Picture 1: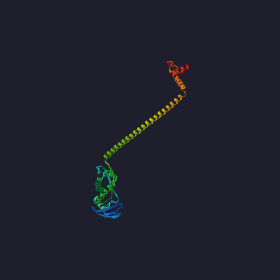
Picture 2: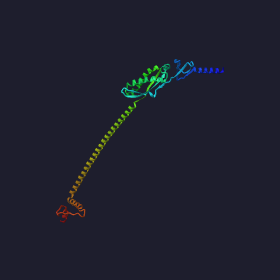
Picture 3: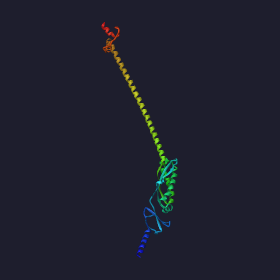
Picture 4: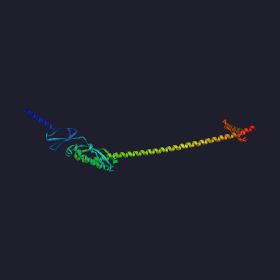
Length: 286
């Protein structure tokens, strides 16, 4: 009898435990009986159900982040540029019964919602060029995508809070081609800069050479003028001195000529006695 009472007590405890469930503040729940939803619970607290008959399914009330590595898709822009787009969705479960009946869980939601997101991404990105998507039109495209997904996601019992493109890259082969084109453009630009620098250098060297020639020419001209003026002044002084005493000056010139002519001891001259070079000696003999 004791064992029966213990067994009955254990069964009653199990049934009592199974008849209660707790809904936390971050969760919401639905009660299912034989595959049919009979109740939804959105507030936190302690609740009761029929043990072994009712089943409770919990859902998160917080914002869900939907997005995985396999969500990358290739999209064509209006100017026929291919880009790789990776988007994510933020949403909340607002109608747990509808959510359970349509998608059942987050994985099911991702499988149902993301094709819708992809469709709107292709449709809206296809209206704009790549440059505009990277600049002023990006926020407009995001708003169009979000509005389209928001209206269609209601049928799954969720409210879309945000849809964002977290990366939009060119395919690898396009990136390599763009890199090569950028490299070619930079090399071309570098050659143009070097050519311009060489041209500027040649112009500067030509100007410097011309300036050098002009300076040398002016200096030579000025030196010739100064030298000519000096010669003229020397000639004037020489002539004035010659006029003061012509006989003495002739004697002086003759003496200098003799000193230069007879500088070496072995100098020999064969001259006529009447040669003008010997006038001083001839006058002395007279």
